[in-house]
Amino acid sequence: MTQRVLPIAPNQEIIFKAFEALKNRAPEQRNLSAKARMKRLDALYKEIWKRRDDLKEAMWLDFRKPPEEVDLTEIFVIKSEIKAVKKGLREWMKPKRVPGGLALVGSSSWVRSEAKGVALIIAPWNYPMQLMFRPLVAAIAAGCTVMLKPSEVTANTAQVVAEIVSEVFDPSEVALIQGGVETATQLLELPFNHIYFTGSPAVGKIVMRAAAKHPCSVTLELGGKSPVIVDDLKSLKSTAKKIAWAKLSNAGQICVAPDYVFIPVHRKEEFLETLKNAMIELYPGALQENKDFQRIAAPHHAERIGNLVDDAVNRGATLLHGGSVNTDHCWVEPTILSDIDSNASILEEEIFGPVLPVVTYQSLDEVVSFINDRPTPLALYIYSKRKKFIREVLGRVQSGGASINNCVIHVSSNHLPFGGLGNSGIGSGHGEHGFREFTHYRGVYEQHFDGAGALLMPPYTPWKTKLVDRLLRWL
Ligand code: NAD
Image (cartoon, rainbow, N blue to C red; front, top):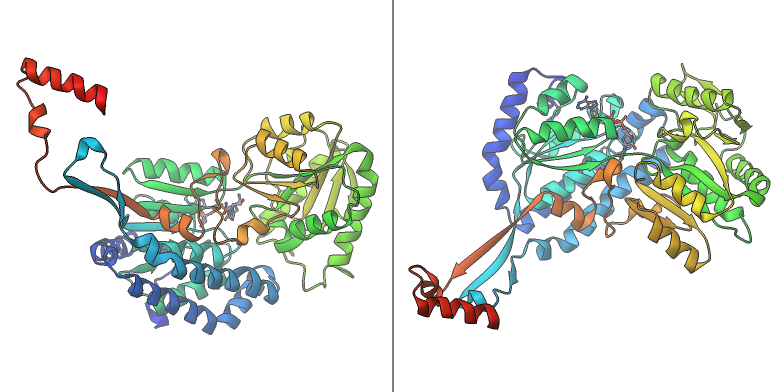
């Protein structure tokens, strides 16, 4: 079936034909039973499982992703997403009756969950299968037909993903188009019914502008800077380990990676030392040879991260650990910085690499105004044993999501909504929340017998005026 994979960066005619097929199929897809939708999800997972080794090889070639992490953060995530969706789908699809109220006597009202139609899913490279298939599971569950656009940066994985899609789905149900910015731009010209975009805030704005032309609804899963606030804890050891793991996993290329850490000023030295030891413990020995430590996806990203470190150091930051960058080998050493000038780019731009700035604080007010002066983060992390402290931070600082006494883990839930706010995104995915993004909730009203409606039509005789007045008082 692999021959059905479309050419990379196909011409406009191929793209248009693929879109027309999806559009023609959409009404039938919308009416698929829950059973038929689940059958497709099962087939998708079966094929992923069959191609498990190919996926591992592709992601190793793309950015030396450890095979164990392909299992844990790509394949398992899709398995558990499908399981959660299958569990809830029949209930989510059921029409829901709603009260009509006194004014609507003689009628019934209900809400139908209906697929929006043809959806476009654009994915980034940092979790190159998971971030394509997790929204696809939601779109199929909702009854949409789907066009997929994986990232060109992780090209080996994009090819395997394209082959999986072509094996499982008829091209009139799901079509996958590979290509870069030019291809994505051509796709955005088409009148989709929903666009689910995962990527940077800058491109998210381009997507939203394109969606406004038709117009269509959007889900924007974007990035940004996710801060960590560490309270004056008794011991910092397990906190440092969890932060180090979350920062270095995927070499820091996680949308919700802890971007920078606040630590009480009198605990600075202790925290820095504990953090450094935790990083060494996780990835011991000569790091260039360590198979567990991932590479950066492209030389220009390694260069970008190196520039952020250089800028901070040139402005007087202390380089406490790491700092080496090998652009040709897409390698950035786990790095810790402290004493950073507040104007340094590393405190403004999303880092998206294994570099952790540590900032000290004396009062929570300082922390709150630092974060609130910047765009709303995708995630907020609080390490504290004090309920009052946690409540106060949650109450004063907004973010897309939050984890308490851990980082990143909230993303794995199929029950929590996952999404940003403002600069970090619009809408939420995962489980029922993803299903809702691809669903139009149609309100339907049915009149069973003529009520008193005719009494309220013109001409407004004095008697009717009185009736209106009474109704206003009674209802
Ligand atoms: P990106 O925005 O550069 O690219 C994402 C996708 O958009 C790719 O498929 C790319 O081909 C396409 N694209 C790029 N430029 C485009 C343009 N001008 N017009 C139309 N499409 C275009 O992002 P990236 O570098 O692949 O990923 C990193 C970013 O994604 C980070 O900001 C990260 O935080 C964010 N991210 C967010 C989530 C989330 O769930 N919120 C998850 C992963 C990554």
